[in-house]
Amino acid sequence: MTRTSVLIVGGGLVGLSAALMLQYHGVDFVLVERRTGASVLPRSRGVHIRSVEMFRQLGIEDRVQEVAATALKAGAFGGARHGRNLIDSEALDLKNIHKMGLGLDPSPSNFCFCPQVLLEPVLADIARERGGDLRFGTELTEFGAGPDGVTATIGGEQIEVGYLLAADGSGSPIRTKLGITGWTLPPTHKYLNAFARADLTELVTGRTFSQCDIANELVRGMILAKNNTDEWSFHLEYDDAPPQNVLEQIHAAIGKDDVDVEILASSTWDTRVHVADEYRRGRVFLAGDAAHQHAPWGGYGANTGIADVHNLTWKLAMVLKGHAAPELLDTYEPERRPRAVLAAQQARIRTDFFARYGIETPSNAADVAQQIDTGSIMSRYNYTDEGYVDALTGQVGTRLPHVELPDGRSTLDLCGPEYVVIAGPDAPDFADKVPVHRISNGMEWAGLLADGALLVRPDQHVAARSDAGLTPGTMTSYLP
Image (tube, rainbow, N blue to C red; front, side):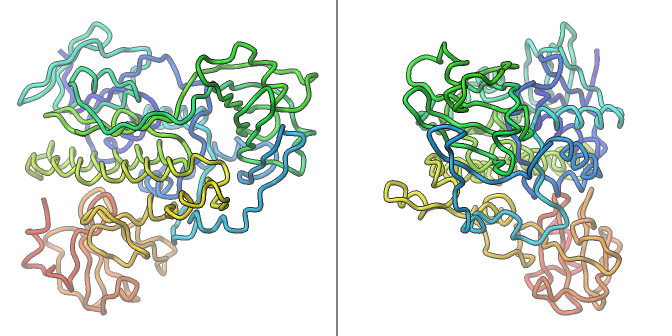
């Protein structure tokens, strides 16, 4: 019988990220995905800065940015349009786009436009190059979890694992079998997502966009760019049943009926909200869409899922290696579930197209007033109080601030795969406890003097500060 430490079920962005993170922490795993390859639908397109920072920690940031560079054939990512159809559409005035917080928080990384259809294969390739056991075209058909492990049947083979990580999507059969309930809100909109090849280069030259909102007598919905030339996603809104006249609606959305359109793939989706009440049931953990589902407005879905497994994998590694008690795993749900609820709430109040871009109108003013910026949702959250901070200054529970070091590296590059101390030049000696990185030019960026120090978790979050109890003698009390 095959035995491994972790079984990952689901080979999408979250499952593949979990695989790479377990490799980073030296944990063996098997990943199974019932699909034979990556989804052909672009789906998620924006990789938030915080996610790119996580890929940087894994040493794959350059590979991800390289594949992203192949995505856009014309024009840059960004911009939004609105009108009866694409031809007649007008650009939105995005002068207040900075309020969304994209790129405002100091970081060594940059936002990455990389459709899921391009990103998934490169993550799978890297995981295989690093020796990962990835089994596409293989389905989990049965599992049973006990106090000492999980027995599962995958592709007709029985396997014993320490823990099962369910990244098996919004319909999660694993969550369903466990009977885990959730916080739900009904959908506000239903869409058919038709991914199509249509050469619109001439129509969008000089007026490229990320999203174009369309409303006329025949069609309501959006056009989303994949490469800003000949690959587009048409999200066609419907009330009761998906439209049968898909090509007619696509032509109406474009504003020309003589454009050659080839539909490459399609699927239906809606804007319902579901956040699981439990992220853990014994030795089974939920992550990504299996744990939380909501509208894509703001791009919080996949990015929240990547952050889920960034939080969980180092904890699994410490427990599996005997460096921490199993109770460490109990911190996963209380740290991550509030982030999913916040992301779902913020996506919900971006349902209106203009609200999505922070443009206030009489009908959306209440929603715009409730919006918080992307940095608060994705980078400046605080695990100690379920809230977020206005600026990262090394507060306990927050992501370590990015500061460029004299050698050109970032403070974030000093973190992981274990706990580390980041200390000023005059700080006491912590070296016999965990790795120590001394910052020659001081710790003022964290509000500390030259003798100050921070204890930082493997996921780049601050665990303790020297002005709040951290000393060489007390440090073990802050370790799991």
